[in-house]
Length: 101
Image (cartoon, rainbow, N blue to C red):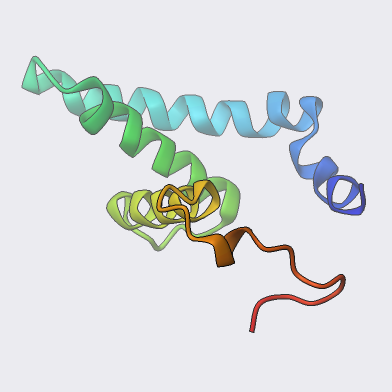
């Protein structure tokens, strides 16, 4: 609950509507304009991944990362959280108040 309370001002429905939505829409529309001359594209690789990376860069403030770097970092975090490899040590709870070394 403490974490949720800390991030709520930045991610509240009102903030998303008034602040983030216009930023995300501008990024998406700019990317569509850049893709138009090609005439065709892969929806995931050429549009969804770069646009989601742009959104993550904006919301995290990591604006100096390329879209490719952000996608890679984001995917690594997702893979680690999902633990596709089934590594049991990853799933062990940490003692209260202790982070990883």
